[in-house]
Image 1 (cartoon, one colour):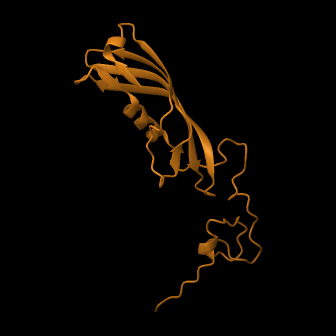
Image 2 (tube, helix red, strand yellow; image 1 turned 90 degrees about the horizontal axis):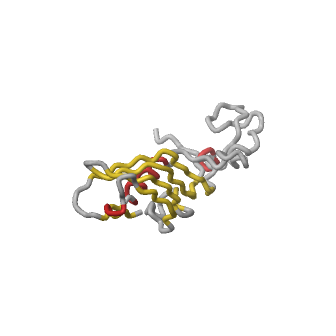
Image 3 (cartoon, helix red, strand yellow; image 1 turned 90 degrees about the vertical axis):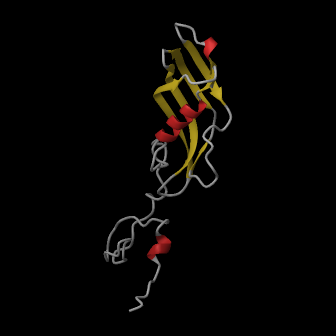
Length: 162
């Protein structure tokens, strides 16, 4: 998403396309990764102080559900991207780092695999605890669904050292 200043006329420049390389640069330890190209449609212009761009950016992401830890594809669209880059130095301006920052800021903090409404999260579909069995909070008879994620902690026996 590089723009040469000579390409931007007084009436602006329409910049549309796809960025196929992984611009998010998320490492393997992250719970999100880019699963498709970044598609952009930006109107670019110049003012006395810098280069501005407004428009739409979208990308498919692979996220991990915070409930069941299952990976799922999440289509992220930012309908109102607004960038301003000061004109300091080179005639070639790269908008990629600015678009990357907007995408990273728009990532959901607690993604759920059932957001699209096309499926039910496996963590919510677990059968209820039997009557009299301690629930996750040890309340002695809760009928709240047992989560497979917390199952190991529910079985943990900690002895008091005192």
